[in-house]
Amino acid sequence: MSAQADASLVSNLLIVAGTVVFTAFCLSAGRIGASAAIQRMRERNLPEPASSLTFICLLGLLCGAITSKIGIHALFGFFIAGIMAGQSPALSQRTRQIISQMVYAIFVPLFFANIGLKMDFLAGFNWLLVLVVTGVGIGGRFLGAWLGVKLTKIGKANRLSIAIAHTPGGAMEIVVGILALEYGVITEPIFVAIVFGAVASSVVLGPWLAYSIKRRKQISVLEFFSHAAIIASLRANSRESAIEELADLAAEHEGISAVPQLRQAVLDRERAKGTAMEEGVAVPHARTDLIKKPLVIVARSGVGIDWDSPDGKVARFIFLILTPQGDDDAQVQILGHIARVMSDPGTRNEIWNAPDAAAIWAIVHRALAPQVVRKRK
Image 1 (cartoon, rainbow, N blue to C red):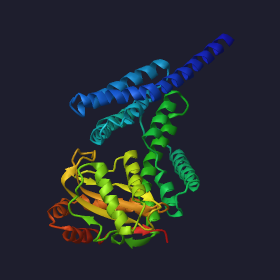
Image 2: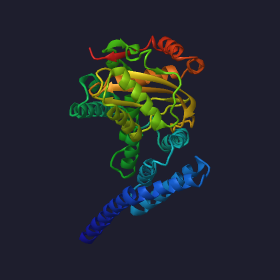
Image 3: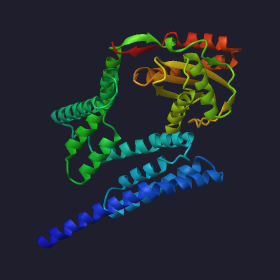
Image 4: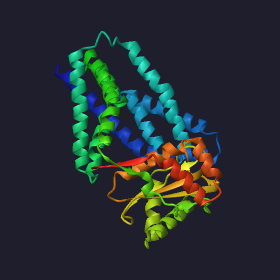
């Protein structure tokens, strides 16, 4: 008995050690190697996104096989592979978008179909267990998010909405439940309750979040636009120079002398994560202490600018959004309103065919007139 216990302990320690070593290697040298491989494929002009997609799938299979050999679930290997490849700057937004669509269109349905084929959810359904797991899950996630956001510098206006947004259970919750079920940590009725709890938490999110937003007062989004803050024909032909041109106009409009600092704030945000949307729209933005109220600069590029957009199209309609450092309300809402208005092909065509800045302002004014920004009362 003692020998078996010792052997089990040694086996578990080897699994833990192997997992730690494998993870450390993947997140250090492995991440650099994956990024270099993707960059090399781009330099050789291999067909995209097929090359990157094939490489990432093979990398996932390799990592899954290694983790399975170590003694842990293959899903952990796929998760690590996703981190290794996903952080590569050489991976374009268009390729990321296609990979994401493929995952949600193929792998996610197969994943849940596989779960449904393996167990009888109706037979394992227990009302009391489902209510307890759902209540504990939603309440625990909401409380954790609420406490977490209170420790940050985020304004009070957004704390409730952020906490509510973190309440849904997702695929990761179900994956952990599957692992626990396979290793006998939980029973089938508990797993069924976890799945129903995840679904229920996603269903209540919409109405609950809408309630929190309706508690705020409404402000017209047009207060942050100006007829003097429009560029009908952008001279820049690169992302960096376009941002600089937009920042210069913003500085002139607001009487800001620290123009280099304003430029740098927007460029730093752009380098951290691209701001291109689909259909030729880009929304570079930044929070800065250099302005006292939100400001939006509108620009149109005749030649189009490569902004690494998800659909691969060049940016022709560019909106620079600047908000004060402590204003956590306006930026996301302005982004949402611009995305909603510019998703209309008619609005894009009107702005594209507008003869001058005055005509562009009239179109933007008409399109955004019904839009409001909600602020804390």
